[in-house]
Structure formats: structure tokens, C-alpha cells
Amino acid sequence: MSTKASSPRIEPSLEACFVSYGEDRHGFLPFKEVARSYFREGVDVRNASVKEALREGQEIMVQVEKEERGNKGAALTSFISLAGRYLVLMPNNPRGGGVSRRVEGEERQETARNHGQAGPATRHVGDCPYCRASAVPWKSCSGTLNYLMQLWRAIEGASKGATGAFLIYQESSLVIRAIRDYFQPDIGEILIDTDEIYEQAHQFMSHVMPDMVHRVKRYSDDVPLFSPLPDRTPDRDGIQPHRAAAIGRRHRDRPH
Image (cartoon, rainbow, N blue to C red; front, top):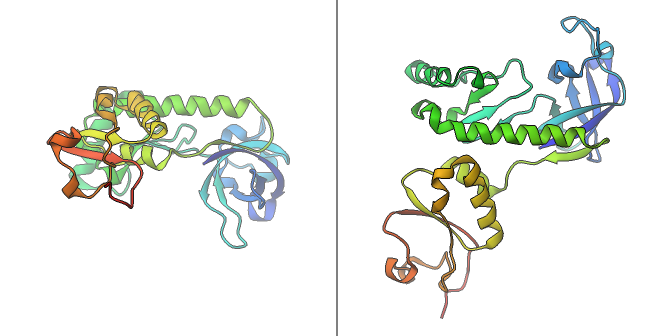
């Protein structure tokens, strides 16, 4: 979640500030998590303290790293991370980019080669180690990168368009995350039985995987999408004999 926040109280002893970001309790923003673009002009960025670099009431775009828990406020950062299927875009983090430390050995070398194929475009891009990006050619990731860059530009524009604390961006719905993380080329169809979710999925695929968007299909058969398997046959439901992913409402009662 990315929000526009203001810094009402600077705590020099903690080298941090407490910021109002739209929730009841202020969030905790360590000085090390403040991007240099928010520093006052003329300060020594290497040696400046939090009191010298920031001013009270200053507006900062932050992302929630840890939700508030108990009496503790949320942990915040101003270094925005936008996750895609194989990539993480870190557009304002000078330390961002490269290959995750979790990736080792030959897999790390292969991932580094894939990053090198895109040149400067990957300067603020890191790989998602749990997605095994080393096995994916760079051209297969370019759609995701373009989508994340568009998203970042939209977030920046929204941040400049208003003042005060407000929510700018919240991570995609569960449906979009499921498609992003689990869709594979051998899945022939994505069947969806609600108009709203179908539109979300279709729009997402058109941006990220336009060559696969035809596989998103609106399911409109009389038999509920999640009816028990004995009631479902390829002939009756029009489901092709290849892997299909189903997204929709679960129906407890079987049709009579």
C-alpha cells in the first residue's frame, strides 16, 4: 500500500519521524528509509541528520512495510516497491536492482545474464526469487516491466495531484495476484463467472500478457463453475481438454 503522508514529528534521538498517513495511529519512518529526493536542498546527504534533512509537516510518499500491531504503529518506507510476476520495480531506490541474494550459483549467473539483455531498463529492477526468473527470457518479462512503469507513473501523478494524507495505491486484488503469480502458458483458459472480476482480469492480461488475453473467458453456463466434478463434462460445459483455471463464486448447493 502506497500513501501520501506528512511528517508532523521528528525524533532526532531515534533518527526517525512519526508520520500521519491516514490511519488512527502514526506510522514509524526510520531516517534510513527516507529517499534523498525528500532531503532539503543544500544538505550533505551523507552526513545530514534527520533534523537537518527533513522538516516537520513535510509531505512524503510512503509504503507500509509492516502493518500496525498492538500498540505499535506501522513500519514505513519511502522506497516504493512494485511487484510483478518475475520482477520487482524499485523506482526511487538507489540500492534497488540486480539479483536477489537468495538466488545462488548457476541460477544467479543465468538471472544476471537475463537482466543484462535489457540494459539500462533494469537499473531499478530486481527479480522475484520465488518465481525462478532465471528460467524466463527477458523478452517474456518486458510486458510486466512496462506495466509496472505505467503504474509507477500513475502513482507519481496521483501523489502530486493533492495534498494531505491519502491512499494512492493498494496492491491488486487477490484475483490479479493469482493470475500474476500462477498463470502458466500451458493453462489454456481462465474461466470467470462474474462481470467485474472478468473485466479486471481482462484488463490486467491486456497490459501484461497481451498475447494471452484471449484465454480469459467469461463463463456463463447454467452449471455453476465450482459444481462437483461428476456433473462437469467437456461436452456439456464447453471446456477444452487442456488445463483450465477457474475464478468465481463457490456454490454450496448443487443444481437440481
